[in-house]
Length: 104
Image 1 (tube, rainbow, N blue to C red):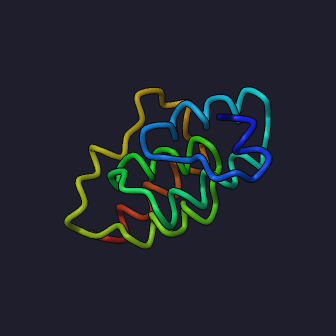
Image 2 (image 1 turned 90 degrees about the vertical axis):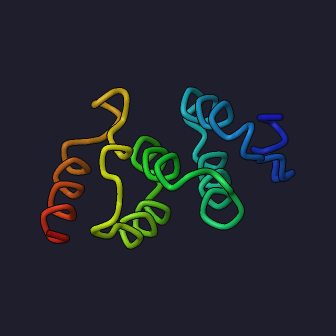
């Protein structure tokens, strides 16, 4: 499954995305991360919170920009906090804080 993703055979599904990203991160395979980002951006039915956390954890810039543009005053920001605070970089925390403050 992971090798199929690396070699361009589309195998990304909502049920497999977390495992594929863990493998891609472990093997430092940017191609696989990029393909997962494309899937999350265009075809995934995962909840917004999952996409946001995943974008920040795996440094998916296009998806991160899309997620930030989707934030509003009605967003449940408690769902955007990761289980491990180290999943977000200090810059990501600052950007999230600044976005929340700008919405108030």
